[in-house]
Length: 322
Length: 311
Picture: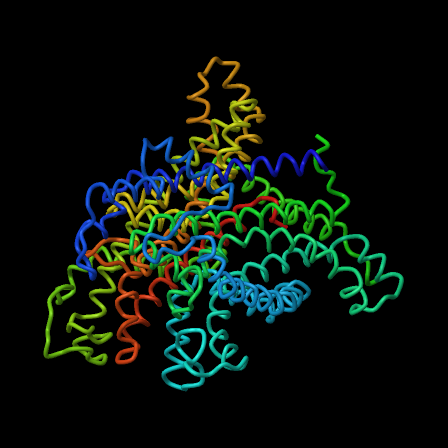
């Protein structure tokens, strides 16, 4: 087990380094100077001199060749110094951490929502294999995985914000209102849109798990012991069905991160995605790099924890004994 | 005594059953000889839903290819007819510049489908090459290639593509390459697993004994025997490529203007949902329908062609 954890951890670190190199290389080789906005007189009308530009380059770690720059960046990153936003002069890490609660709240809400809905639906579909209820649920999961999330978002806005006027179409709070209910009202549609895809994947997964579990011999034993169908379902099958779901939940972190970017852009949700988009549009390299690596870390940690948890939760899996 | 069945009828029933069993047996035996098209045809014949999906897909593809038959130019503006509701002339109405929505959706389909299918072809080629080499050679090569596959599977792909296109000017070529770059790993895994089982089969061993070269064995004996699995993977891969492309275009990092795909049409329509919700409905419905059909078709084929699932 220890060996397995170590192996997975090293693999995770390798992926992290490769992703950072890839992102760094893109930004380094991209045309255009990151200090462009200081070279031309902007709102202040002050044009920086060559000496000032050089000093700024040095302070931002933009001197030397690509390897030196990468090494300098990586060293700073390890020490928690993620650089300073070119645009707002704020510390990148604190900028990200400031936006984090909004995105995390959305991701958490959507994860909870998708599990709450997916578990019963998956169990119903699995226990009523090929019956009407299963067919309807399965058809819905196909729609769920095939629908572009942003389109669902736009459709929901049209129906619930414009036609019915029940829910606000964008933002996180109404101006001047500071109640929880207001926040919940703003969060309903983004959470639904973000959870749709995961929900469909979970339902399918739980359904096929339930079908395999129902054919296991312990179910037959329980039936012959006279345990009611409900008792078998909740007492035994449910537990065994939920185990593999842990891994799926972990592996869906990636879609959750990129999904939240799309959802935030549809609903103008002031989270990491919105920050990333504005940083990308303004060529704010330190922020882009910071958000890329931050999202990558969340995603890798999700996968990593899922694998480890799965190993602990299912004693039949003797990981590392090869 | 009346219940006694005459031995003659008993024999007749047996003969009938015997003939039936023989027929099935010969069919199964013959099916080994039959080509892929026959299997696909039978799978589609047995599964009406899959057939329906195939027909819908064909209609979407053909109408996109023959979009030039539409009486309207996708870029011709008609300022007098801004955001017109559906009518006999304009089936789905017109957009904010008076362009025919239906024609534009068909031309958008050209872009989306081209990107989707091209990305699929590239990713299937890379995936099949890597997967078959990895499975066939085994050992260190396998270990290294599979670690690379692992890495590609755990990378935040959409995010990296967005970062890439925010600094690199995008066109259809780079978009296809980027989408394929992050999707071949799934195909490689499937192909590797198939290669591992196929390389132990008698016909491969026979070919080896006859002195057929390794690349020839892979090309002539291994890959043709997993065409069905590759087709299933390809169909699901087109679906995900179209979805990813639409998300990228929606965020403004997809196909560059003046070309517009379903995703970029949606991005454009979002500004006008207050005035014309239909503008947003159509391209999204096209994406949903196409991806839905591809997904259902892929899954159905997988079930139909998987011998383990035949009961």
